[in-house]
Image (cartoon, rainbow, N blue to C red; front, side):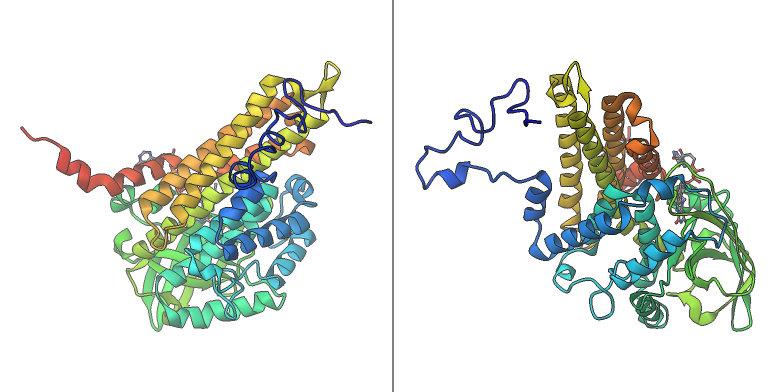
Length: 455
Ligand SMILES: Cc1cc2nc3c(=O)[nH]c(=O)nc-3n(C[C@H](O)[C@H](O)[C@H](O)COP(=O)(O)OP(=O)(O)OC[C@H]3O[C@@H](n4cnc5c(N)ncnc54)[C@H](O)[C@@H]3O)c2cc1C
């Protein structure tokens, strides 16, 4: 079949008045200044990155296309896994990811797998590129491979070099050798999600997971819920209050899954990101030796907040990737589907919708990169702004894709309905988007208080 020479309503690309031919007769010195290169938006954006991060972005994209694409839909539709029964395809993915350095990119070579060049820039920027590229292809597998870093960050932010040497470096070596050692991060309790993530709620609550002083260490008692990767993690950074004290005594403990009394109770059957289990875990008088305290006792709240301030950039990156994935699915549909004898993409209403999706996605990517490029210190207000705005707009972009795709968009095979379910979760975890809005105001509090007029 002959290729359609131009879309309805447009001149063909080689017409003298079209963008490609337009500047051909201008003086040679001016032409390069006004003639944009014909590249994709992805290539244009990648070209704006420092070379080391551009290379990192390409690495994430090629890994996602090679390792995540083929299983994305089948893993999402697979039966709900019981705790400890990871499907063989995901076990194989973890091994490959480990060997290729996808589980160790928080640290530079030779300790981990990040390039030294990329380490010159804020780590949250590279992590946001990672969640974007992996999330674009399959957000469930992205979370399976990325929640692990959330479990390692508290050890880094505690500034606990001993713990890095004892726990993180051997685990990284195992992963690089093809024996994946997964970490998880556990703050949420059955009656405390937001209260574990913002000070106002936390200040008045009684923590459910408690550590009691015993000879040589601590005895942990309680439960954590919705712990991503909690079912497969070998090491978990668990936040618990000290006995008879409030949440201000929160302490971070490194619990390993082989400690007696540790139990994976169940995996939740949740709406999206199904390749990654949200596990309920329980501690039945788990003995945790003193050298498994991360940082010092009572530093947990600060370590937790520092961790979330950094990781919310990565959640914003998930939003960008999901919006990109939805936009690509809608464009593919508009080009393949015929309406009234012509491809859907010829209709201007459809073109307007596609232009909106491309632009919304570019806008949130721009916001995120702008904030992340300067985030050597991860600020709460900036990371929360990125988290709630990028994920809210991403869900809107996914809705636009579904609007455009009609009944086809509701089918599992379209990929769009999975993106919709996956994207919705990003508005909830790492603090609901309401809580992240409040975090922006919390950082402005002193300025606001100063402006309140008293009679
Ligand atoms: C897929 C998934 C993965 C997750 N992974 C992890 C993980 O790896 N580790 C971990 O520890 N946790 C994890 N979580 C938990 C997640 O961080 C919490 O679900 C989230 O913080 C929200 O808490 P909650 O659901 O208990 O909501 P709640 O705290 O019960 O809040 C209920 C509602 O009240 C609102 N609200 C609460 N407080 C206020 C307030 N002060 N002002 C106004 N509104 C308020 C909230 O915005 C929300 O709308 C995960 C959750 C999901 C869904």
